Amino acid sequence: MTDLPLPLAAPEELGLSSLRLARLGECLGREIERGRVPGAVALVARRGRLGFFESFGHRDAASGAPMERNAIFRIYSMTKPITSVAAMMLWEEGRFLLSDPVAKYLPELADLKVAVARGAQIELVPLERPVTIHDLLRHTSGLTYEFRGSGAVQKMYMSAKVYSRAQSSADQVATLSKLPLLHQPGTRWEYGRSTDVVGRLVEVLSGERLGAFFERHILAPLGMVDTAFHVPQHHQSRLAEPFARDPESGGTVQLLEVRSAPNFESGGGGLVSTASDYARFLQMLLSGGSLDGRRLLSRKTIEFMTADHLGPITGAPDLLLPGHGFGLGFAVRLQAGIAQIPGSIGQYFWGGLAGTTFWVDPAEQLLALLLIQAPGQRDYYRTLFRNLVYSAFDD
Image (cartoon, rainbow, N blue to C red; front, side, top):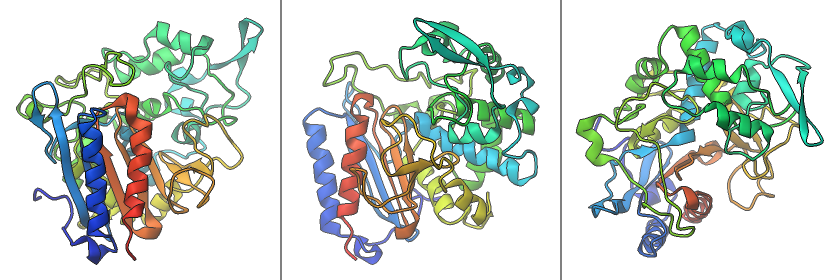
């Protein structure tokens, strides 16, 4: 594979404006000059070809090292779509049904309870129905994240150190089995550790470590040479770093230590990647499950994954925007309006804790990526980037 993940084209050949894409770059440059983010890599592709692929600012502001297009970023929850694809590859092999209780394959999760507030106390009540694999993929399992609130269940997660990278995936599932769910399965969309459990499910069904499964079935076939659960020593000079302190809050910024291989290969948030690598993954999705003659999933499976699986189920309005639902690993746009960001019906997307973001717009044959390492600024730049890319349409 060359330096470019996809063939290059003049923006006008893709229905995009060179002047308006340059304006996108100028805007990112101004934000970097203001000290809001250290640097960024931005990529826009349409109709299978690259219209914009640029780097800005510094890869490491402390050393002054310039950002380059091949910089390696901690992508956090942009791991989730890759884990979801891995699971659905096994689903296509007939290894499980989405309606299967997860305890069929991870029996330690058979006796989960739900925490119900009774005044200042909580009562643990039985499940009204089992947690299914469908629940895990669409975040309706009742599992949460320890940082998603300060209630009793989140405090239990913190005390149990469910986030520890010293544990194995099996250890984490064993820990989660002893903790209560935040909601009854299937009743609320609750962002949490569900995709970590999907990662463990992939390990159990395949008999491989999650990273090994990724490499053999997704990363190598797609030519994603820099995507992994850690950055090897000979590539650590390409690792993008955040500011030491958040430019707005003044608080210390601490991201995952990815210079050595973790014991815990987190299906929900452990990968590092580059813009080129992740663009290859997104183009595979946009192309209906295959790229350069290598088919990972069927077109119908991609359509199924990127459809809404929530219906009337709601939850977490800070993450699940108005006019949106959730599929199997992706947020999905259901209405052209309502939300305060542009897009098309059928668009699907997600982002990562440190600021990385992507979306795929099948109606416009578009994919776009913005990679930054600035946790405190992530919501602003996701929205800004989306606005600027759609402003560059010229057809």
